[in-house]
Amino acid sequence: MTDIEIKKGLAGVTVDYTAVSKVTPDTNSLLYRGYPVQELAGTQPFEAVAYLLWHGELPQPHELSEFETFERTHRDLDDNVKAAIDLLPLEAHPMDVVRTAVSVLGANDPTTADNSPASDLAKANLLFAKIPAMVAYDQRRRRGEELVPPRGDLDYSRNFLWMTFGEVPDDVVAHAFNVSMILYAEHSFNASTFTARVITSTTADLYSAVVGAIGALKGALHGGANEAVMHIFEEIGTAENVGPWLDDALANKRKIMGFGHRVYKKGDSRVPTMKSALDTLIAHEEATDLAALYDALESDFVGRKGIYPNLDYPSGPAYHLIGFDTLTFTPLFVAARVTGWTAHILEQAASNALIRPLSAYNGPDERHIDGYEPTDAEREVAERPAEQAL
Image (cartoon, rainbow, N blue to C red; front, side, top):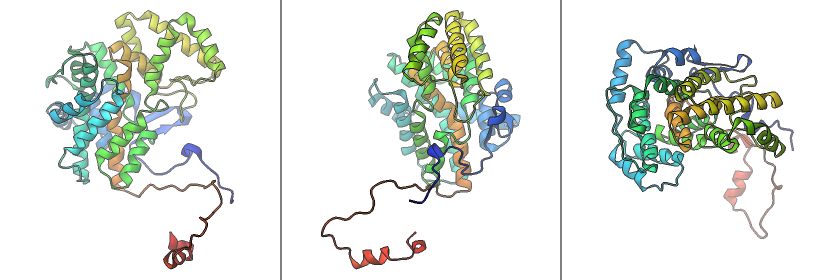
């Protein structure tokens, strides 16, 4: 066999250009359309960042107003989507619910097959407006609570929390949630985004690409990590238990979720911004025990392994303090990342090439069924020069 260098997980492979975001490992930095993400999180509403990802520039006041008007008038949970959610068992993972709900939304959209840039941008706007209602209603139904209709007088983040909890959040909570949405919105060619681009490259519709991305995001090695962080916190219990728990976890070669990153090796640039938002929530909720556990695990693990937290480490506890069920954390990621996914879908479609990598075969050598005789047509194909066969 000819020696072939295999890049497992496509590590280090550059497959295309993108103008949506830039990750710079050397400085642990992340830019959205050229803007440092921490600057966006500190100054912008999520609606403006979504607009930036789709259009390449932050909106002018009239552009933001127009987009906000669209978003606020399309927040309702469609009756057919609600009916589909109600058919699903309460035991189903919320990621399965939101994946199904998006699929139903796409199946009922008469413009689904229209892959024109204008139509796809309209679908992206619609998903941005609709997904919060899907996520909020699923958490409520699991708690035996009724649907809370959206309010048109609230911004995106406050309305999302209103639909989930039936209360208008105070500024501390709304700000922390807005920050988390911005930090999760986009991250270059991560697994779910690349999945969306692969599906788009086949000329499948935007909803199919988003559904595929949701499936990729469900995994614990990608979006499910923020859930796993809270499960670890619940398992440890208190700060005093961190040392013995970590001894056992490392001895059994457990992967400690919330630490390390495929791209960042010296720390995730999003963490300080999210940690600052978490700190405000900790002070607001007087959650000193949670803060102690957070700090103890981070200090001990970084000290032992030299591996730093990623965004999931502070976002999991933040969502917990806001009041979300742990299983809802990754659907929140969907609500944020759908902006980045759809920006990449639009970009892929605008300069498309079918994504079809090669593989290196390492199975049995060619073998044949006893007594089988190939037809003349089969022989003719097998004897063609390789470039024609391709």
